[in-house]
Length: 364
Ligand SMILES: NC(=O)c1ccc[n+]([C@@H]2O[C@H](COP(=O)([O-])OP(=O)(O)OC[C@H]3O[C@@H](n4cnc5c(N)ncnc54)[C@H](O)[C@@H]3O)[C@@H](O)[C@H]2O)c1
Ligand SMILES: O=C(O)[C@H]1O[C@H](OP(=O)(O)OP(=O)(O)OC[C@H]2O[C@@H](n3ccc(=O)[nH]c3=O)[C@H](O)[C@@H]2O)[C@H](O)[C@@H](O)[C@@H]1O
Image (tube, rainbow, N blue to C red; front, side, top):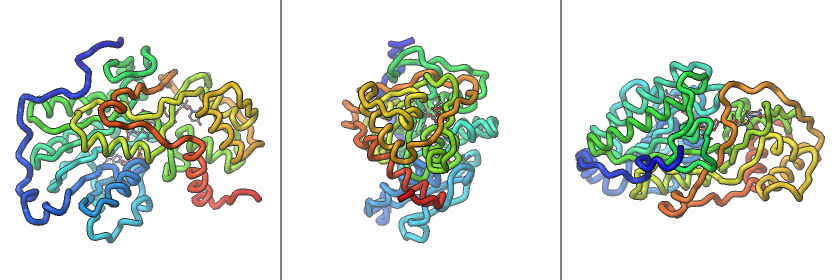
């Protein structure tokens, strides 16, 4: 349960960090920080790349196997002298000289991570091992994008970083949540044993433009369904809760964590929480009085997308967490971070992106 304090932030290694690559001392590196982003062709990764590329001192290398990502997400950078894109699977070793590694590679949508669970485990375990080996060889700092799913179906609410979680080790989600738990373990073992500089972010549900339209996650589903005039599919029981963070806030949190002095794990997410039924009903009956500000925002926005859309209930999949809401005190105090973008501002940006890709303009 809670208060298992050995899981607090900022463990200190007894080992000094490995020597940085000699290349870092070369003339070239005085002007440039070379940053590897694994999974950089995906949803969060491509937004992170956009932000890192805005800094003219950064050189960015993306590796991705395009399982759930796309070159399209990076098309604005292909050919740029400070950018390189490599088709590579992180379950294979990688030899590059870099100063920082943002390790995101892993399918995030439950539909996709359950599609080939053995591959998902390999990506989380062997992929993280390979990236830690690389970090050790070149003396790079490495950040892992872990997940709120390490808390499983949490018995502590909201979730703090010292909660060890309630996870089914043999269920259909285990390839992902147990995989990420092992990835966190590997990060801390490399830190303690080899002095690697590590950072762990526990990301809570994130939404925004560039999510795969048929990716299966709830916000992308509801927006695509509302645009296509298809019923919104609330998975039973509908009382399960989530909290949604806009992608630019997430990217800001990840960069702050990488640049700061805390190993983590640190929760990064938006604490505004609502049930999936509430989320869907926002379209039908906008009772502005009874919901949180976040939900009121969501109602107003989804109504704008399609006020006549129907809601149906459908079966859920096993082990769906019943409630989830981050405690972000640590992110706030240690990184000076809190989410800024309200649903009322984030959802229309996503709607615009989805309409463009679906080629369904807004009705006049
Ligand atoms: N989006 C969220 O709400 C959320 C929440 C918690 C954690 N996360 C974590 O953040 C990271 C990014 O999530 P996202 O939403 O951008 O997902 P995404 O599926 O859009 O991106 C993942 C990227 O990793 C690539 N990839 C997958 N397996 C790979 C492999 N073996 N080798 C190389 N590349 C591989 C995919 O092709 C894709 O481009 C993931 O690690 C995910 O677990 C995301
Ligand atoms: O934040 C996290 O840590 C995790 O969040 C999501 O996992 P999940 O919360 O299950 O995401 P969704 O698939 O969007 O489901 C959210 C809720 O909406 C429900 N849902 C989903 C889709 C839908 O059409 N209707 C619906 O009611 C699900 O049953 C679930 O209760 C991500 O996909 C994981 O990669 C990530 O690690």
